[in-house]
Length: 138
Ligand SMILES: [Cu+2]
Image 1 (cartoon, helix red, strand yellow):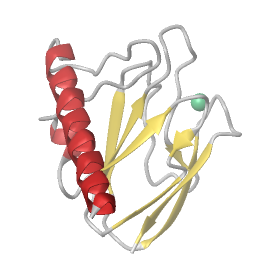
Image 2 (cartoon, protein in one colour):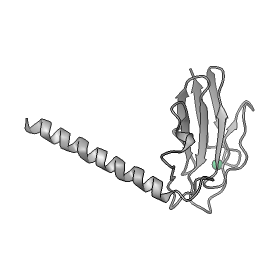
Image 3 (cartoon, protein in one colour):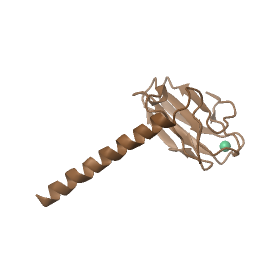
Image 4 (tube, protein in one colour):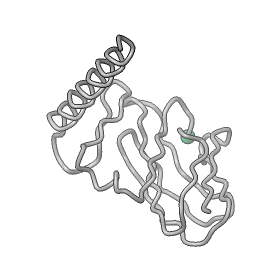
């Protein structure tokens, strides 16, 4: 019984924290344009269309794609967002097989590509070839 009470308390704390985070996202939203990183954090409005039920989001930070592997269903739009702090080099999301290619993305910039057919798609960052990721459409 004590154990159950603790679990419920933890759940309530987690819910309260989620509400606080959501409120923070809303109050931090300045405009509907590019999502400006602050202190290296990505701030994504809770009502952002980027967070659609069928979408996938890949953050670019610390000179890496996070997550490095995303698995999505055919027809999914994947969005990359550069979460580096201001002053860090721009990055790209560039298909190894030239299936897509973003422009140079400054901190805060986003790029989206919709994947049609199933397959495994490797990609990289042009100025930093060690940055690699994979989108698996299945
Ligand atoms: Cu890069």
